[in-house]
Amino acid sequence: MISVIIPTHNRAELVLRAMDSVLCQSEATEVIVVDDGSTDDSRQILEERRREEPRVRLITQACRGAAAARNRGAAVAQGDVLVFLDSDDELLPQSLAVFAAGFRDPTVGAVCSAAMFVDANGAEKSISHPRPLGPAYNNQKGLFLAGTFAVRRDTFQELGGFAVSCRSSQHTEFALRLIPYLMRDGRRLKMRDDLTVRVHVHEQDHLRGDVTNLLEGALYIIETHGTQLRQSARYFADWHNIAAVYAAKMNRLGLARSLFLTSIWAYPRNAKNLMRLVIACLPPIARRVWRVDVTK
Image (spheres, one colour):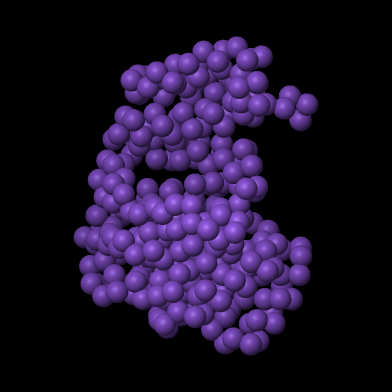
């Protein structure tokens, strides 16, 4: 059986769409919805659906974030395989059959698939397939977004689940631990080109707008996986550059300069980073370039 875990917070209507996209699948499944401290009518709506559908399990908790909610769902899951789905997205038909087929080989520890991104009207914007991830990921291919990968429950538990302290890029951080673990354990990462999830792109994405969480997530990955990232000078530099831009947007220009310097030292071929460093040394210009609101 496959357990699909859906964390949700104040998405009363959208979460029903996500749940229905799972319940219509052909594979044996359970849907575990973790209400992460919603303050709207999510709990009432979810309770009604749970009474109607025995495959739905509902867990409520104080607001602790998506990573903690996913881990809570995984802790009670009964399926052999876990799939994580965001509450504003939806699985495509036969998605779970795609994942189940990948796990017919007992040496497979995780399966990656493709994602379709759609706009507010449901029109297709782009498609992402598993791609080469580089030396930091043991030169494997993959795509790690909610709805694009499935992992054996025992593997997820042995890895300790998602890092609750990582405030963003949580699937990326998990992949940085998962892939080396699978390689050491003699298991494989299986690629499928099938589309399994429809990702709804919001113009006002609450996570992308929270620069504090984005910076903390980037710094967590740098600090926790720095040695692994160094296997690719460009990848190591890219993460420092990402964190530096977030720091600049928060008007933390000293931190931004330090991160830009490390990025340039690691991969000096990227001339744009030198220009960014120069801008970070000129606070009035930096605040205009990165649109910093100094009144906050």
